Every structure is written in C-alpha cells, then in structure tokens.
Image: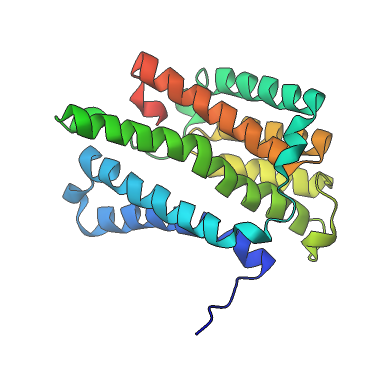
Length: 229
C-alpha cells in the first residue's frame, strides 16, 4: 500500500507543527500535573522533539524545491548571511531583559543528569537540534511558506525573497512571539527576512539561522548560561 505524499504546503507546515506540538504537550502536562514538568522532564523530552521534527523534514524534503544548497557557493551572499548571524547572536545574548521576555523560559541544563555520558549525549543532541534541525524546520515554514503565502495564496509562484510590507511585518512579529525572548526574536525574524530579500535564497536563510544558533550554543556551553537554551 502506497503512502500519499504531503502537498507542498503541508510539507512546509508539518515539521513546524510537529515541533510546536511538543511545546503544547508540555503546557498540557503542566496544567494536568505541574509537578511532572521539571528540568529533567523537559531535557528528556527534547531528543524526542528533535527526532520527530527531523523525521518530518526527511519525509517532506523532496518537496522543498526552493532549498538549493549550491546557492551557498555565492561568496557575497554567504558572507552576508554569516555576518548577519553573528550580529543577531550578539544582540540575542544582550536582550535577556525583563521587558523583552514573555512567559517562563524552560532551561535545558544537562546537569540535571549525574552521568557524564548522559550529559554529553544531551548536549550533542541539543546542539544538533539547534544548529541543524531547527533552522531548516523554521525556515521552510517562515520563509519558504508563510512569507510567500502572505503575498499570494499560490505561494510557489512567488519568487523567493519577495515581500510586501504586510508579509515582512507579520512574519517578523509572529517569529518574535514564538520565542521567550520576543524582542530578540523579532530582531532575528527581521534579519532573516532581510537575508531572504537580499539573497533570494532559502539556503542562505538556513545558513544564517544555523550559524546564529550554533554561536548561541557555543555561548551557552562556555558561559553555562543555560537560560538561553
């Protein structure tokens, strides 16, 4: 029996929905049994969240026709993406201010496990999730899909990097509201949109997002400021 492939729209929304469903799960568990939502619980849940999202991305990957990794060979665009990523990272770690945060942040501190092997495993999974899985998942949703869908329902006919004032503003604000550090998130959303506008390349957006997340991961591991995770 053959399994029906998702539509181009579903392929871009499904991995994001899978990822967000785990956040919803934590909220539901916290309402039903708040004592269960401990740092250990959230740390143990992350590998499942990252793996499920990665599986969804692999399943849908062939439908990401606008994700062309060869576009990373454009030196000016790639240098701009990397420089933008570092700028966003620097801003992010300096915007953990009370007025610029929303809700409660759940830290991902591997020290909740006493075994060094368990700690190392969790760190590796967290870094891979942040630097590889999340950038692709979020960029195919925010840039490949929503940015273009807000321009035209037939989003595949919209040239990558095309914006209206509404699509730029809406995706910037919504991207920020997805994050605990909402102001830093909005700045990041605007920066990634500008990279998309400048390069017209989804791959460049993924690179920018990935470098930013990797820099943040390095910062967390060096400074032990787990609240950024």
